[in-house]
Length: 115
Image 1 (tube, one colour):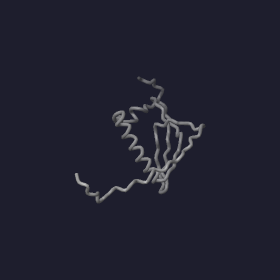
Image 2: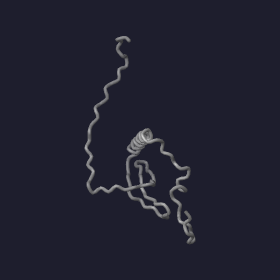
Image 3: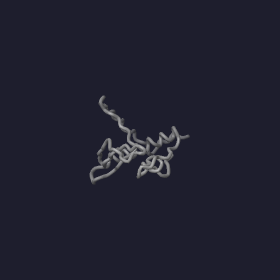
Image 4: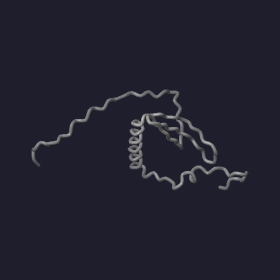
């Protein structure tokens, strides 16, 4: 080992700023198992919905509108968190056909459900 200085030292990263976020006591959490995503040149729109099995109609419960830059930052944060989750709990396996697995609609014509 030599005492030669590193010709390309890494700069010290800027200290992270802390921010305070208030969560209102009256905030209601919603469960969403479906999302619709649309966009304009300046916005990404995320509609979060709930679709229950064997029910022919779903319902949008929340709409989030963000800039494309913030949407991309959200995408990166989700990817990182899903990777962390899978490291801790194992791979999240997706069914081959989500609609067939989760949302079987009632039979038309008055047939009874067959389980």
